[in-house]
Length: 249
Length: 219
Image 1 (cartoon, each protein chain N blue to C red):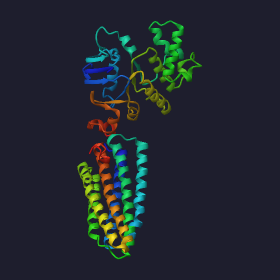
Image 2 (image 1 turned 180 degrees about the horizontal axis):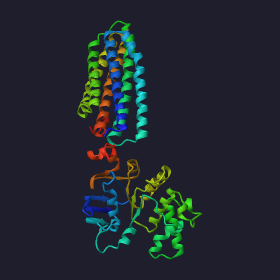
Image 3 (image 1 turned 90 degrees about the horizontal axis):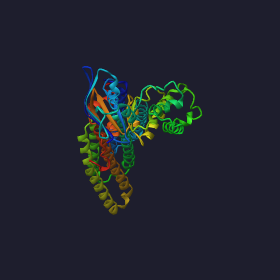
């Protein structure tokens, strides 16, 4: 097991957004988090690399363990944690820099100066993000000139450059057209060979297509988790079935 | 919450029930035509098969449309796949009714063989199985479906008995060979209707419980 949460509760001030969530993530598997808006799936995702620390009134109880280390331990270096647990957001958010500098950014922040190493790493990351062939001749052009789908893959390349172990994806294709979405989904299938992936999606079909395991959240609680095939053909829980068949939510 | 999709799914279910009503009438009439030597009724069964075939095509279209446009999940996905299986089996039931009707027309023009009681018994079993399969589908009843599967051996045994007796009869009555062969084929059609009813029962278990009990696996 790569990572798990144990008795996780999360509060925004007085409001409890997550209730006693126990969820395991296996290495090299894709886990999809699904549920209606406001169910806590994105909140839970952001707990996994402590992105919620940035919200002043928030509070966490319980544990999240990453290979034996409690990520909420006071001694944990949050920057290093976020290097190990990278994140891709809903909307592509490239920096207003060149394609090359976007991918090299995390490495430079971590003190890498060797030009050859940087060039190799940028190329490798862009290849892993299935973008290299499309941008190799214009690495020093602005990233803002790329299409939405290319920008999202650039953000994935940027996340991969710092060699994370886990990739968190918060609705990574929701702002993209069907072709760009398909490319991201194909990429997820390839990336899971090397990374553990946790994805929040509102598209049930996307969850069914890309994930190995699906977890259904409702009103801040984990209702059911299981193999994706079973979850989408014969879920055990009535609430899960009602949600994925569109009877509520 | 009743969605447009669920209304379409209900329409499909009603269409399958409509098809099953035609299939049931076809077997009932085919058996009656056989046992009462009624050629006119047999001809009606043959002529009526086109309606069952048309309904199968309509259900195929609905299946494709719902799968492509709504991408259903869980119980809805199982319902569509299950209903498609039911409709395929209903179409075959219609074909078997036509086979029986064709033999009934031939046999009605020849002197009767002394096997009507045995055939009546077999047709009663096959019809009971079919009616129960449709009830199980209509009510979504997996217990009744499993019961139907358990009746199939009785249906097979009666078919074997009829065939054995007819083979013996042929040995003694050479001029009756042609009629006996037709009767054997009729018996085989009734046995097939039992099998197809079992398939429908299996589809109902799949729709309701999401498990496959085909080929006597995990029954």
